Amino acid sequence: MITQRGTLTASVTHEPTAEERSRAARVVASYARDAAELTELLDMLGLAASEASEPGSAPDQIEQRERAEVRARRSRPLLVSELAEIFAESDVAARSGTR
Image 1: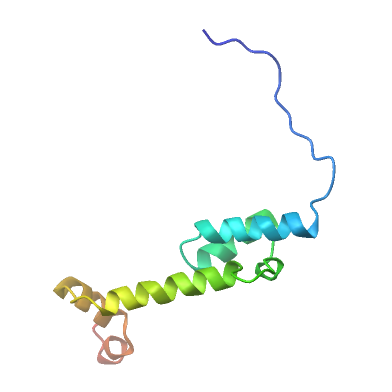
Image 2: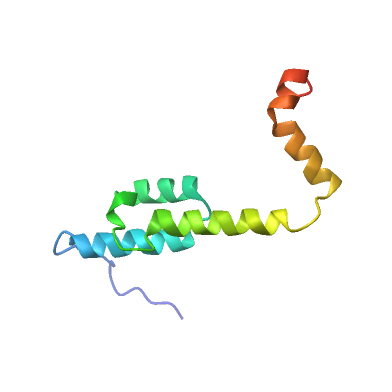
């Protein structure tokens, strides 16, 4: 049984402090898949990557994650479909007109 008790509202009683904004930016960075997504999410929240001022901050975490992904990709053989996708996105494909 669902009952309605009234309208749920949230009110902000103060502007977030620099520490709260920094913490929020770091949390967003921990969930972002790449730098582009991080930028988009921070923009939505009215935050900037520069607000994540502690070591291991948003840009550092994204950069470390991307480097780890590159290392993981380099250590395994490519599938033919992956190789074809890399070629299709390359400058060689653009110059040869196969794009």
